[in-house]
Image (cartoon, rainbow, N blue to C red; front, side, top):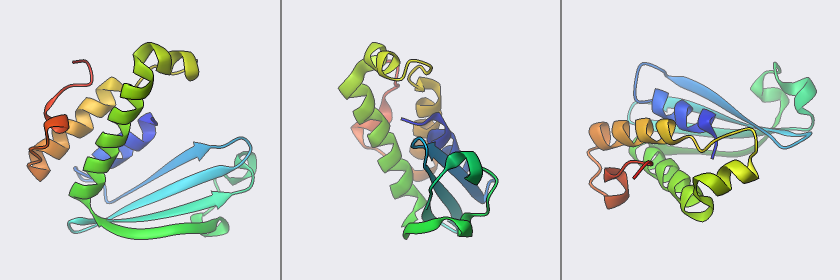
Length: 133
């Protein structure tokens, strides 16, 4: 689970209107552009052939792979659920073993969960617990 994705979605609960999150697919880059539009988030995903040359490139230089607008509450919820699934599958030790340079982003998940629970009033059981539980 990407710390940047968790932080990027969490920032949409504050003053941020737009965030970009990049995933390094070695050598390709997949970039998510998230734009808040009222209660919704416009999500556009771009693919670039080579991250070493695309990092500073404008979004429209990449191939647009997917586009959708979703309620921020749904996006926040699904990202929390995805992070929880990664944690259940690998555990913290397994996550660290698989992604050697990175620990599981528990604090980022807890921050997003708190914002989602507070602002979206989510009562789903999984949104009520901490990643450290």
